[in-house]
Length: 421
Image 1 (tube, rainbow, N blue to C red):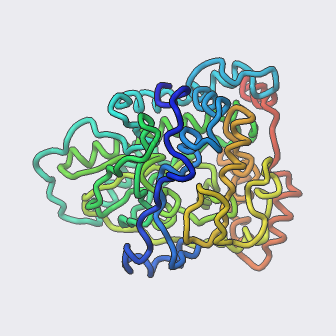
Image 2: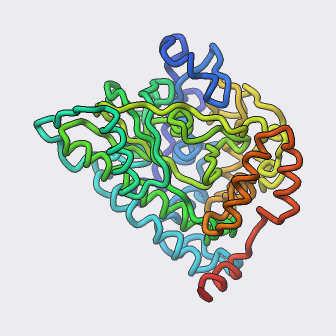
C-alpha cells in the first residue's frame, strides 16, 4: 500500500512531538453530567487526543516504534505472501483469507490516497455526492429515529444507538501519511447527532486467535463497516441532511458507543456489549438529521471486570492491567486525564508485529463473548449475565472457566470443522 512508506525519513522527533491540545476546561460543562455512565473517571487534567500519537501512526513516524518489520506488517495487511510461515494458522491459505477480507476497505482507501487521505482510518469517509438540495420535512423526530435505526439494521448493523456530539472524543489533529506529521483536523463540528453502529465479528474464527486465520473477521468487519456507514450516510444525504461516515478515524469510538447505550467499558480497554461482548467493530455517522438520543446502560461490566482477569491473565505480551483502574501514563499513546484500565499499546502492537497479524486473545477469552449460533448457549448467557451482575460474580467466573468457554481452537481444526459443514 502506498500509504505506508518504507523509505521516507522520520520527520517527527522526541524534541518535536505532536501536541495534545484541548483541555477539559476548554470543552465546558455540557457532558459532565453523563460522565458517570462512561465506565471511567474523567479528571480535571483531561486532554483531547492527537491522532498522531496513536500506536499505528507512531509505527510510521516514531523511531522508537517504526522499523522495517513494522512497515512490512502494514504492507502484509494488504499484499499476498508477506508474513506467511509454515506454522499452523499462518500459512498461505490463512493470510489469503485474511487479506481478502480487507478488499472493500482497500477500495474505499484507494479513492483518495493521492489527496493525502486514508478514508476510514485516518480521515472520515468522503461522501460520493452532496446532500439533496431540499430537506425532507420531519414530522416526528421519534418516527424518524425509528426509521433511521431500521435503515441501519437493513444495511447490516448488528446493533445501533444514537447520542450527542461530544468534542472530548474528537482528535485535535489528524495524521498525514504524505508528510509523516500532523495535519489539520477535517470533520465539521456542527453536526449535533452521532449514530453509532456495531458490526458483530464471527465467533468461531475468533476462537483461533492468535492466528492469521482469525484476521479475516477483522478485515471483513472493517470492509463491512466502511460500506455500511457510507450507505447510511448516503441515505441521510438523500433526505437533504448532512452526514459523515467514520470508522476507525476522527474520534474515539468507545466513549461514543457507551454514551449511545451500546455497552460498558471493560478491563481489556474495549467496549463490552451484552449480546456480543467485545466481539464487534464500531462505526459512527455524524449528522444534522433531527434524532432522539439513547441513554447509557449498566449491566455490571465494571464490577465483574474487577473480579475477572481472564483477559489480563491470557494476554500474550502482558499488555492488559491486572490491577484497578489508574490514571498513570504508560506511554505516548495514552489519553491524558482519564482514570481507567489502560492497555499498554506498545507491548500489544509489538506482539502483533512479531506474529505478523493482529491478536484477539482478550476477545476470545472474555466471559461476555458467547456463541450466538447456539440456542442453548444463548439461554445460558442470559442467565449468566444476571449472575455476573449479582453478588455471585465469582460463581459466574467459575462457571465460565469450568464449562470450557474461552481458550484456543486450533486453526486446522477450525478449517476442518467448517469444511465438514
